[in-house]
Image (cartoon, rainbow, N blue to C red; front, side, top):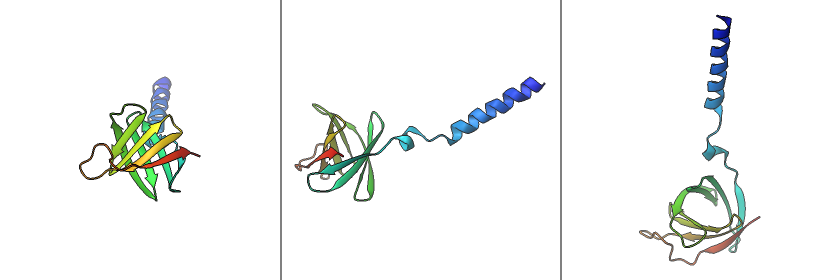
Length: 110
């Protein structure tokens, strides 16, 4: 009987620990970038298909999109296109665009 209660208590501790653990989305570290227009940008990558960017105190969730090279993310009016983890280009997306027509700005990780 003691073993049964000990196993139950251990299982409850494990489940309790899982419930309080942050999700991958919350745990992803922010990377800081400085852009050629003096704007700062923060980005994190909670999973291979998502980039979360913070520009001027606004946070936007972008999703992976087709690209010829690098990783391109789009959503919420923005395109974030990275080459490796240190260089990127930020461009606004006009209504209805899937690829930004605006030239964008170069950004480099600090």
